[in-house]
Length: 265
Length: 336
Image (tube, rainbow over all chains, first blue to last red; front, top):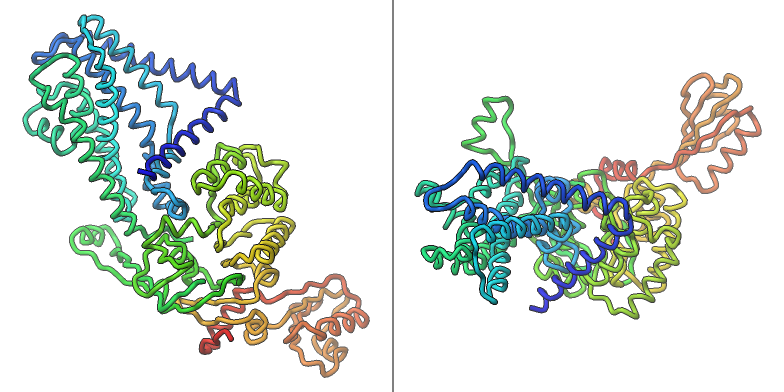
């Protein structure tokens, strides 16, 4: 517990430091802000255009699908902000940056996350919220006072599920010294979580629920807010899945670290 | 302080077969070769010692340092440092050591060194007041004040390296590892870093271990030298002993204004014990066993007898010494 507090403190420190540096270059910061907003806006327009051509998928209306998509963007943005080590194999294993990480007294995964943190991704959260707001308005959804809390819990769980799977996959780099990654494959699969799972066939639905549980990042938790009672059990399972998958990811990672061989230098 | 017993590290290396057919066969059955990167290494180091680990590329220095710092898990043997087993109690152990990898940066690229130091202070949970005092001393002694607030990516290598050294010491470790700390630095920066390290060793009684290819680093800093070759420790002793035993002596190369033969030179030098080599009609090389006393004599005699346009003095490099040691195949000399 003491450790986790320490890690969170350092993340806060680092982010503070990051924004401080960014703000120091005012023009640069504003430029980035604008370009990020524009790119998210383009995304938004694109999504709406695409979905206007899709009136219904199974029992899901267009607005419900848009809501799910919007929800998905929030945990996904958090995940890509904190687990930005796409180049883990290249940067830490092949170039041996892991050496340095291992000589510091904080858990090494936390350090890797910290070093590749991408605070810009936070804009994805805003886009997600706007899309959800739009869909909720169209659907005339009503919320309870505790819904924001549940929302936060589900979003964090979703981000952790992604994080766990991603960590386990990145840890494969510790065992093999080949350059090829499985990252592209996972990158493709993660897209599936955005859409209602019952549009897929049984096998894919099973995979998205139990093997690579990306459905827990989008559809299942979003179904709670859409008041689809059929999916309530799954929505409630989301935090549990988060603990299990992140725990497994961490275990694989820790095991991988003992197999780390370093790069020659 | 450091105790290493029969340390070993083996790597299993996949032997790729040649050609496309070979690659295809590799898919099904792989051949592995076991390479001993570090073979039966034993030594002890007392607190406050400053010593160098040298050896050719691939001799196992880096692997050894990585095992000593807890990065790699040894295949066999024991390491005990500061009362810890490095690879087992890594997070506790690394609080008591500092590491500088010459080829890698500890600092955050986009932050200024000062901000990196602040972050590192919270990483190591350094006491605020005491840490500040210590940091100010580091900044002052390494003379990094002028650029300590600029982003790291804007610093020159020499400036960055000094910041790296400061960063590795932020938590006042008792033991400092430096892996090729002076690679690519200019003489002035090298000197500054060396002076700083020597001072640190004297005032704080810090134990310092460095690997290097630069013999001047060792001369400036270390009394004790460990030499590794092919994963084995082949020398452990004082630097002077090392030089005397395996040094190639010193070579002086003269560029003459007039044609000069080796015999002319031999005649001028008399029966001085040295080797003379004719490079071309105008250039000659003289090799003396020791530079003490003999070198000034050679220089003054040649300069006064012939018209010389250029002189170069070539000292034995670490690599030469290491090569000599290996080719003479001597047994390990132990440190008294």
